[in-house]
Image 1 (cartoon, rainbow, N blue to C red):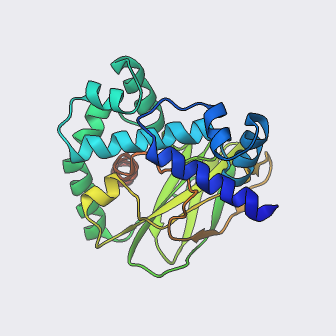
Image 2 (cartoon, rainbow, N blue to C red):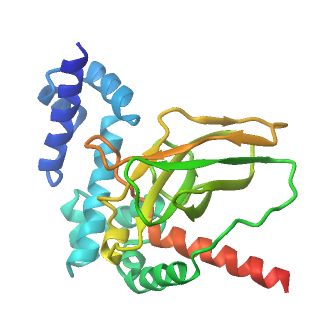
Length: 266
């Protein structure tokens, strides 16, 4: 039963990748996997963590990110390529789930290069230790394959790394991380690696970065000053949802916080 279920999910994701430009619905995807729409949706969400059509929309936005960086196609044409007939709808959806507009993402190569260079030069970072009655989340970072670089960690409201995380940080690979001032709520912990040897395009379109994602929500409760959550990075897996959030934006946000902290100490 488990083998058949895994094969069904694999076949569905393979079909999504091959037909991103075509109109796809739940009934058609379920038929490809030889399940009823109800059972297919349940099994897909149990395996991957998000519903199949939401996963599909993520793949399409990932394809849009690729086209924005790798081609000079107009934004309107890229939206139509992934099935968005309205440039306004495409721009709104892209901005909500990537964190910046399509135009800003296309123009972010220079800022990503600058942020990457700044981080590479500094190499030592820490979140400011602020007195708070709210919870801090911390833990150690482990990687299945050693690498030299840093790790971006975010707390997201859904089990997909998209939009701007509610909280986040950046830290060395083999180190402890610390996210202070986290309000009570449910969060999904997502992380991805950036190796010093990476090219900027690989940061903007992170297909090959090591990563992790929590399938179960982390419940932060009031009155608990510390929550422990270790992170285990692994190479990309076939069924991982795409990393939609702009890593360039996350690097810029972290550097801005560092600069503000340095000014506050003067």
